[in-house]
Length: 108
Image (tube, rainbow, N blue to C red; front, side, top):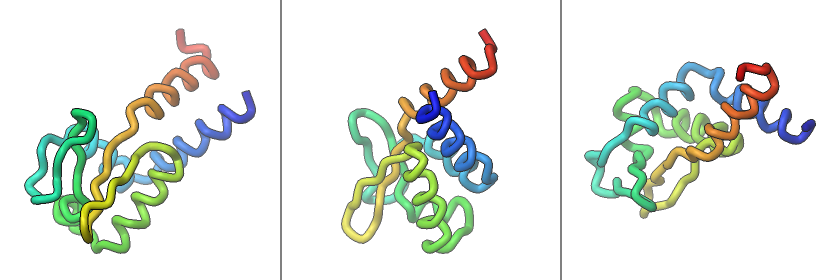
């Protein structure tokens, strides 16, 4: 239980930042991107860091910082493509987080 609780806190902390929450929403709702390196992995669309930069008006270092936080929480995976990186949401982590919250707070 303690290990899982630590994971839930790590995910909650990552999602508590409004910019990271926006990025997660973008990833969850993404379709094929406009960037030439965009594409799908295992049938799931992802976003290139250049698209995140453009849509949110952020510089590359800020996007990298936020993506590192999301990756460390297990919420996204990244795939290098040349000088860019593609990011994909890890649905399993979100599902596990929601299940854990439901169990911990007896929401069922």
